[in-house]
Every structure is written in C-alpha cells, then in structure tokens.
Length: 106
Image (cartoon, rainbow, N blue to C red; front, side, top):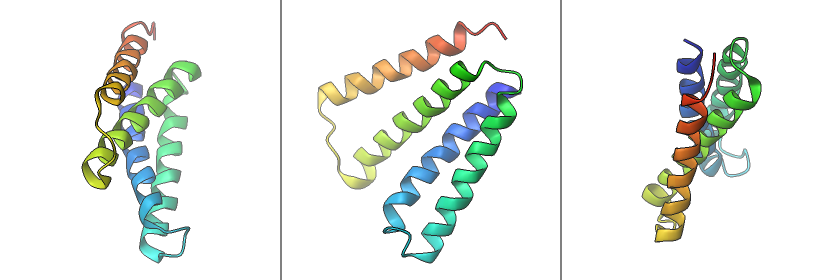
C-alpha cells in the first residue's frame, strides 16, 4: 500500500509541476488553485507512505517519478528537446527508480 501511495504522490507531483507552467506566477486563479491543491495532496500522500517506507528511498522515488513525468510532458506539451542525451538521462533516472524499489527491504 505504501508504494502505491508513493506512486500516486509522484503522479500528482507531475500535475503540480505542469500547473506551475500555467499559473503564470500565481496570477491565474484556477491553475493556481490546482498548483496548491496538487502540491498539498502530493506531500500528504508522501507523508503517509513514509510511515512505513524509508524516507530516503520513498523521497527519491517520488521525486524521480515527478522528474521523469514532467520531463516527458515537457517534450510532448511544450516542445522541449527530445535529443538522445536527454532521453538517455531520463532512462537512467527510470533505472534508478526501479533499482530503489526492487532493493527496498520493507
């Protein structure tokens, strides 16, 4: 259950990051509310997960999911670079996330 919470928190972290792009410095009401709500929910789910998971592992996986997700959405939504070094770097982060998960002893 704790790993599911980390995964959901990571996905919601992606929503948080995308909403930052659209809230235009917190000048747009709905994107700003989405930023605040998704950020709070993501942190809340992470705090629930770390009750049973090691903080270092859970936090690293959470940030990795968010980082990879927003980088992919940056490529798709905002036409950011998709060159091979960037994609290779994302693959390495994914490998790191998987490695942390499979080596967790909890």
